[in-house]
Image (cartoon, rainbow, N blue to C red):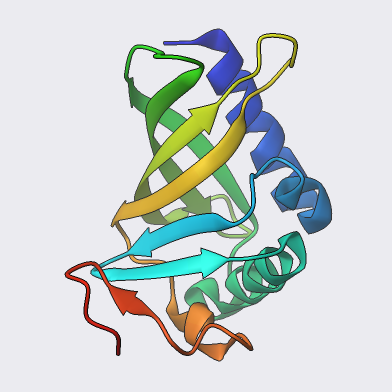
Length: 150
């Protein structure tokens, strides 16, 4: 496993857990494609992504979320500064009990002079991102991955 990717994900988790959602958003490339189930969302700006993260923090298990912890499950070989990373995010409540694990596939892009990569694509594999995306302004029209607009 890449030490850089693990450190990067731990840094993301730390920012998220501390409520630094703008800091989290700075680690992503926009527009940001985001797949959840059979739907594609595109975050056009960091501000919209921050809104989604804020709703997510409050919406997961009725506000029981105390922190998230990443585990890198697998990584693809980097090709032209891009790498595929599969992560399990454990969601812990205030007592430290695990109540949800989501599996997410990321595409990271890393410039050779950067300390950490940036996230270019997110795809939820298990543990759908909650319905917060439907509540965001400008996110009501989404495209199904088969090309239909709903």
